[in-house]
Image (cartoon, rainbow, N blue to C red):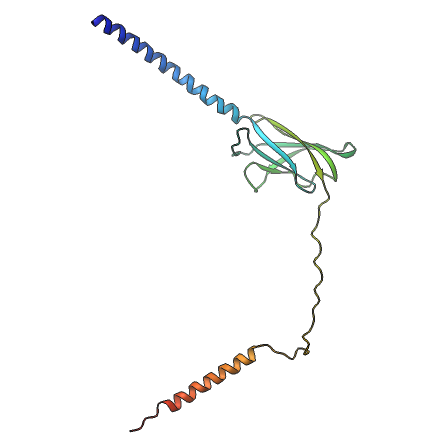
Length: 182
């Protein structure tokens, strides 16, 4: 029986060594799959409603972008006009949010945004640039004088008169309220 035990012990030791050697390789393979996903960006390009472009950058798997990446914008517009390359800076509106500011003139533009390695990506979109709109001017408000010509002084004289009457009543009560008869 000792021979069988030696053979089984050798088989178990061999199996344990094989599994321990394969475990780091499996761990590296498991880490490589998310790393490959993390190396890809998803860029969402849209107009800002005026003459600029906004870009939302996230990882391809939907996670938020936690580092600053270099995004470069180029655009081709009406009559063959070209803009760019323009390097975009991150904006304080949120993580992975970039904005170009007013770089386009009015019209329809084909916009391309590129991100170089290591987070290499490219996105294109058609953007309608419009002239910036200002809010309408408020309607003028007519200022009129009161009908009595400003003679009305408001409520405060009545309040002051009431306070004087209350003070006088308290004074009279203090003077005559303590009278004693012996």
